[in-house]
Amino acid sequence: MRQLILALPVLMAACVAPGTPQPQAARLSAEALTLTLSDGTICRARWAEAGGVGRMDDCGPGYGYSVRVVENPNVLRQLWTGLTGALGAEGAVPPMAEVVITDAMGRDHVFVSPPPRD
Image 1 (tube, rainbow, N blue to C red):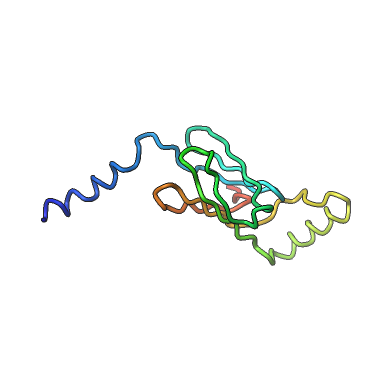
Image 2: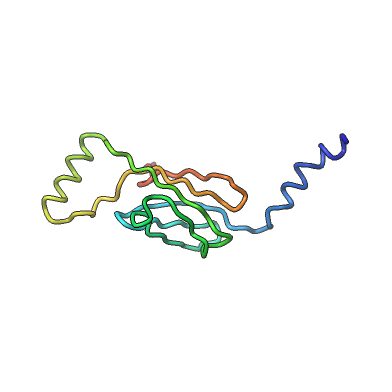
């Protein structure tokens, strides 16, 4: 029994195919979620039409996604978004959001969009 318990992590790791691409970055526009995988694959989903939750079945092994938009961003961002909208550039400023990508093993990869600057 002890050998089985010690071997369990190795067996679980074997379930993940070697070389399976992993989510590296997620970015939002007003309508689209762009996911970049570790192998360079770029996948897109229309997150706004889907209500913020959906699946990218045709992307690598398939990924679920969930987008939680920050409803009340800081005052400067609110002013900038309002200004661009007033100038006719509605949707030019991507929403601030947390993006959770769920891989085939059920692991969550959490990103923020737009990504923080270094």
